[in-house]
Image (cartoon, rainbow, N blue to C red; front, side):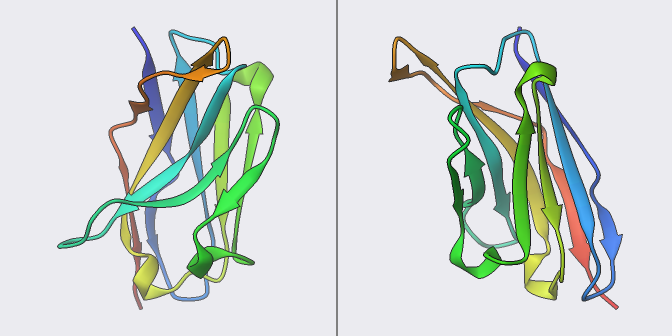
Length: 120
């Protein structure tokens, strides 16, 4: 059974930093896109950042230059370094993994979510 376990959320002041981590078990992340989505109260879930198995990165415009995604394929982990955090970054952050088999995407897996609150 595939599981994605997130860690690293919490409360931080505006301008501060947090690092989110996600560990995948039950499958190999070698051929998978991994990343992070977020959902704020009353809003739809949105893509924050993804990284392919070829290490190509994609970011939400509002986090470019502040957030960095990186992965350790050998450890089946993906991380999101978040700097210069703003109150509008407050949301539940979800780890995401979409495996590829023979080059074709399969159904994605999701973590349980971790709360990030940016407030003074």
